[in-house]
Amino acid sequence: MRKPFAYLAIAILGLSLTACGSATPPPGPTTTAPHRTPTASPTPSATPVAKQATPARTTPLPPLTDRNILNYCPDVPAVHFDGKPSDVTQIAVCTSVTSADRITESAYSVNFNQEALLSAYSEPNALLTKESCVRVAKDPLIVWLTLKDGTIHPVYAPVDHCGYPNADAEAAYQAAGLQIQWEADFDLNGNPINP
Image (cartoon, rainbow, N blue to C red; front, side, top):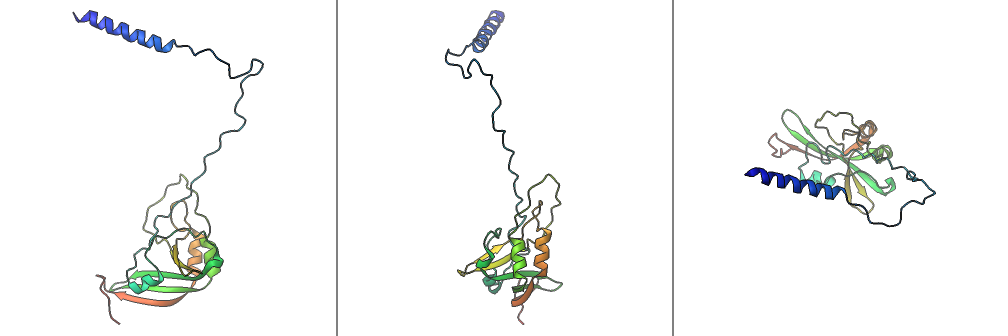
């Protein structure tokens, strides 16, 4: 009893597929002149633009917590330095160092090699590659720039293809002369230690 229904379903399916495949386009003008043969596009397709690496971190490692330190180095994500060095009036570096019995946060002003530091930090980030990267917790070497208008902007060191500071930025950061501006000590639980 079911065979006639199966034959009918196959026949309808076959007719519908035949109808789909036998449609002819409506008559109309051709897209090429009879005396020309179609050719390839005169402009080759553009190569995809390579993307720049992004930093693995845009905040200090470890984070800063002292309110006086945060006056020098506000707690906002760092960006790439795309400004003009002539607009920068001051450069600050803030650190947090953990020892066996305390955490010391420090704010410094850069008083030597400012030009070299700004030059290294204005370099573009490296292009992404297919090379593998080992993920580690690495300091982004953020510096805080005070501009002529008085605003403070954190900027990260330009990064390699893995998102870590490149060698030139690391060298410029290490060569910068620092003068202490403020220091705060905490016990290992984060409680302030009075001097």
